Image (cartoon, rainbow, N blue to C red):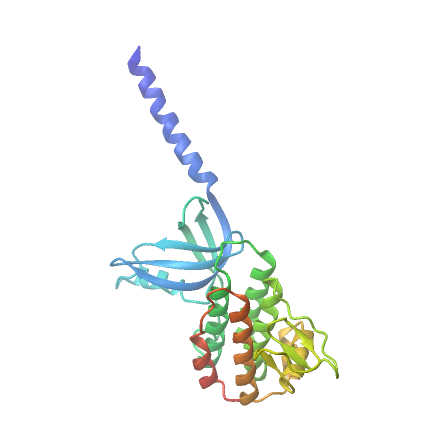
Amino acid sequence: MALPLEIDEQPTALYTINYQLFLNLFKTNGIVLRTLKYGETSVIVSIFTDLFGTQSYLVNGIRTSSKKAQSKANLFQPGAILQLVVYHNELKKLQRIKETNWKYLYENIFFNVAKNAVAMFIVELLWKCLKQPETSHELFQFSEDILIHLDLSSETEMANYPLFFAIHLATFLGLQITDNYSALNNVLDLQEGLFIAGKPQHPYYVEEPYSNISSQLLKIMQPHELVQIKVNKDVRRVMMTAFQNYYALHIQDFGVMKSVPVLQAVISG
């Protein structure tokens, strides 16, 4: 009588394992933030997902010369917007991907040098700020919309995208700059995140005209409105440095952004 019992138990156990895997399978959208080589043919991909925030995924066998592997590797370029079916286990730091497809296939970002530089700035800023796997559907939608609008944007809009993204990203992180700018409060205190009258006692602030432009950027809600901001590359350079300082003051271990020098070199207008 023991033999039939053993035969019955094995399929039940296998069904349970498969059912548990099914329960851990989810559909989500994601933005690729970083891809690192792992082993001989694999990569570890950091993806900002809609469902789970920033997650790391092990992807095997894509660093080979086969056409199938190369086609799959193209999906994991930084900035790519993907549809994913993933296995997710909250107890694991490294997750797995079952299926990957394009959600939005760029027309310009992967081929236009200037737009690619802006996209890499956006991706790097997200990577530096999203250090914990916290879910933020609103931030994901904002980031996805920004990248899609950037892909289709005019040169005038594109040049101001980094400033627009940097100042509005802070809102989703709980670091919003208060727009209380006025003729009296015309100095932006980067340490306090608001406009004040007169210079503070520390060196982290910006004066006119940069404070006024910051206030203008805070009022703009749609990327296509960026054509209203009339600034040159020298002004953008100062403001980019100021916004980097702002994040460094408020995000632990923020460091220095590698994408900024490239961005400043390719956007000359």
